[in-house]
Amino acid sequence: MAGTITITISRSIRNLFLLIFATVLLITFYRSATSTSTSLSTSYLLPSSWQNPSTTSGGDIPEDIANLIPAERELALKQYEYANNMQPYFPPNPHWGGGREDYKFHSDVELRKLAVCTATNTCRENQTNVIILGYIHAHFHIYEGYMGGEGIWTHSLVDTLEKWGYTILHARDDWPYMHYLHNQIPDMVKAIIAWRTGQYGTFDDQVKTHGRGNGIPAWKFFVYNYFPDHYTSTVGDAWNIHSEFGYSKKPRNFTFIPYVVEPATTPPYTPAITRPYQVYILAKYVRYFYPGAQPAWEDRGIFLRAKDILEKEFPGFEFVVGCKDDRNAAQQKEIPMEVPAGVRNLGQMDRLEFERQLANSRAMLGIGWPTISPSPHVALSLGIPFINPYSMNPGSKKDDPESWAQSQHHTLKVLPPPHIYNVLRNNETEFVDAIRQALLHPIEPFILPIMTREYHEKQISEWLHTDWRSKAEAILEDRKKGIETQNGKEVKLFEL
Ligand SMILES: *[C@@H]1O[C@H](CO)[C@@H](O)[C@H](O)[C@H]1NC(C)=O
Ligand SMILES: *[C@@H]1O[C@H](CO)[C@@H](O)[C@H](O)[C@H]1NC(C)=O
Ligand SMILES: *[C@@H]1O[C@H](CO)[C@@H](O)[C@H](O)[C@H]1NC(C)=O
Image (tube, rainbow, N blue to C red; front, side, top):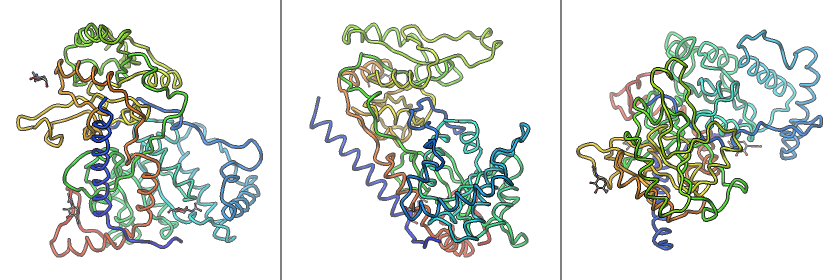
């Protein structure tokens, strides 16, 4: 089993800040030098690279084994043979008759592999380090192809853990089952990523307590929320894992593990100057333009008025969107909704057509929803600036994003033009001007340094190599003395 190295979260978060700060400086420099709710995340952009199913080589040996480094390949091949021997007795594709035991079946297979590899001394380097996925979006992603923000994050996480040979068990959001899994191999389970609640009970029913010695130790449980700044762990801040970093001048101590934003490839990438004057509106559903979704541009006439102005300056100027009406027939009849005048609806597109349309645009326009979606990151990666609507409180300052009431992209709002144009909601002057500036100042493909694969892997590696038990022990000692260093309403005493 891999040794553990303790790292200081506070230091890594401070480094993260320096990184973001450096990025902003870099962009500012680049610009002057060239002078030219939390509920569920929703997303729209689904780059092909995020959806490719894992491939097999067609031959007998799966490609993921063939591509391993020699020592690992040798072990994996032996395990593959054992698995083949077991197949007649353990059918690989049992029929559930439409049941929903798929997650248990996956975990059973992985447990058998662990039994075989420990018995035959063929475990791969990281195989006996087990991570349990117990948040419902992992299940939706893995078994139903869900590709909202949490799905994209799950894809990145699983990709990396599999590449490194970690064992991943699936548990839906089934806390009794997580307890059952943990109890079979308590020393191997390094972490459980889940929500506090689930369909069959809660974490509190399964946590290790004085009276429940075989419960799940609180320090192994990481609460997952796509959105930053949610503190619902029993132990402390770093036991909250978030996929977006958000923005705050104050250092925060949650565990940040980004999803991966891939570099643009050709196609669909084409340089901005060869694209038409097309502005892509981020909106999957037509209702995002209407009250109820709190649209950033309440007066829907703004699109046609802006188009009239901008098409004189930019020949062929167009707003496009790819959206549909997802409401039921009765709702559609009661309140008919249309894409605003001046916007061309490309309708529902298949993934490739969608990527082609996006890559053929010169700016992406936010209309308020969805918030902190992966899509603006993808737009930047294709060399497309994002127009980010925000709102202010009475005391807010325009030049202090932290004082704002709300913005559509809480992470990217910190970037200045020409990458991000923050625009006051409902302000038509700023709306038109931001689009104009975006069209006048094409950008190169850009990925925020904290969203690259390299950074993603670094964060996962630090998380895997942290001695969480010792950290929890220190927090617990303070807590017992009445010194509270952590945030959130759920922090309380626990058993190690
Ligand atoms: C084992 O995991 C670590 C990260 O914890 C990774 O750096 C290493 O490459 C993995 N080993 C193999 C053989 O993939
Ligand atoms: C994060 O941790 C550092 C060091 O323990 C602490 O000084 C700081 O107050 C923490 N931040 C928050 C928001 O609690
Ligand atoms: C709209 O924005 C412009 C330019 O920033 C500003 O001068 C004007 O006061 C704003 N209008 C409102 C109603 O906030």
